[in-house]
Amino acid sequence: MPEMPEVQGLVDFLRGRLTGVEITRVTVAAIAALKTYDPPVQALHGAVVTGLERHGKFIDISTAPTTEGSDAAPHLIFHLAKAGWLRWYDQVSTTLIRPGKTPIALRVAFGDGAGFDLTEAGTKKSLAVYVVRDPADVPGIARLGPDPLGAGFDRDTLAGLLAGRRTQIKGVLRDQSVIAGVGNAYSDEILHVAKTSPYALAATLSDEEIDRLYAAMIDTLTDAVAEASGKPPADLKDAKRRGMRVHGRRGEICPVCGDTVRSVFFADNSLEYCPTCQTGGKILADRRLSRLLK
Image (cartoon, rainbow, N blue to C red; front, top):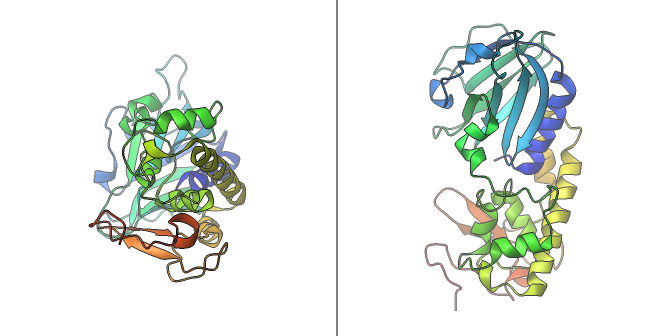
């Protein structure tokens, strides 16, 4: 799943190529992916891109009104979910898309001939597309917590978000209504750098542990965003994998202490951690047991 750094990388890439360019065609190939109907998709035809922003893991393409005196110009907003991605083309195909016969969910073409497809692998389809007048009209954006790299997010902000939460810190970091933009991969990375167990209860973290967690969050995400910046979409996934210290590295050697990276498996994903760095050498039980092995 693309998370904040990869989404920011996509935003930076698209901003540099689309600002001031006209949208000529938007084709919805997977009807289930389109979550809105007013304004219609056709309202984007002829609109000029004025900017790109990131809201958590959402990408927001804003446009200028197509005619003088018209209503607020629509935003094209999308969330790539777990298995979605953006494929960029300097010359986008004009071939007719056959719904149900392709992984393409949406195709957007621009006046300079370029364009992109939103694609989604697998059978569980969660990619979401919205055409709205205001980003706040997207429920997922309206529910977002603060962005950890946003202005004003400091150590005390994090402490306030954790206070009273008797839930595991791994889940808190992934909860978009608490902190926007962090998912499964970067929560593993942040907790490893912070030397914190993913099963630790958020409300029980000491001041020193919160200090470490805050520093780990800012440093990890800042470095990852810098690594993603300037890369075309085709290179972002590999760059993310290369930068991981523990996530997706089950059975490999921890780069800090030399212990073996371990996994805990869930229904549809897993978490990775280092026992020596994070749990005092203890091996975490399967999530179904929800406790440490004795």
